[in-house]
Image 1 (spheres, rainbow, N blue to C red):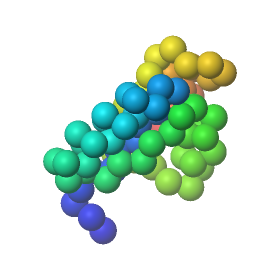
Image 2 (cartoon, rainbow, N blue to C red):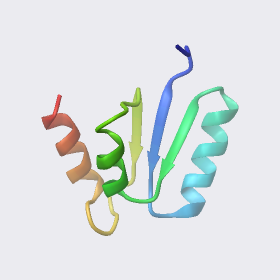
Image 3 (tube, one colour):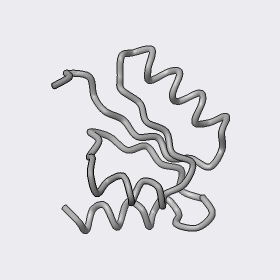
Image 4 (cartoon, one colour):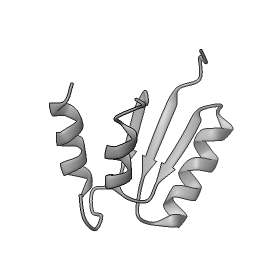
Length: 74
């Protein structure tokens, strides 16, 4: 088991994902990036991150809907 926090970054903007991935990985965090919330909902069935950073406005399922779903399943 790793002591590094596991962080999922969810954003439909590739440049935002790239910047966050670079910065957070430089401090030693394990980063997984997603370009949409639907993929997160599939992945969360088998894995759980320590932290999720999500964009609010995204096509399809937006960040607020994603966070509501994740909060409800706790």
